[in-house]
Amino acid sequence: MGQVLPDVILTNITKRYDGNAVVRDVSLSIDQGEFVSILGPSGCGKTTTLRMIAGFILPDEGTVEIRREIVNDIPPHKRDFAMVFQSYALFPHLSVYDNVAFGLKITKVKKNQIVERVSTALTAVGLSGYEKRLPRQLSGGQQQRVALARAIVMNPAVLLLDEPLSNLDLKMRQSMRIEIK
Image (cartoon, rainbow, N blue to C red):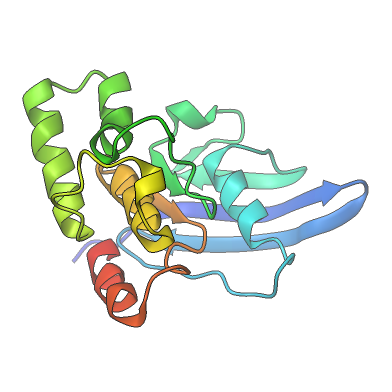
């Protein structure tokens, strides 16, 4: 049986703000298919670490690798990842369907594939039938599930989730853990 190669490798990454190290000398290896949680108190650098993997901010020191390629100098839109932000980052003027389909449309996926993939993603997060609603017509937990559907619909190599289950009730949280895996 062949060796499983890591999908994400952080090597000695450090990030400072105003001279203060928010993330200091962190190394981490995440294998393909592995589900990893980064735990810690508020302000300890969890979100900063995710944002460095995504390329939204650069580490001051160290390297970020995705699928055996150092990506420190590669912009976010050229990395094969999707991220669910703590704030959801939904477009308020777009329907649930259009929020989920957004990434597929800008990457020029065929319309019939968009319809199929959006339907599958919304079913996975328990929001089939909500396609025409706007974010303001949804509860916080439903908005969070739209953000999750928007991420998983892209079938990314790496899925980054910043407190993705925080606004869900216990039953939905357990269901979403299974879907995410």
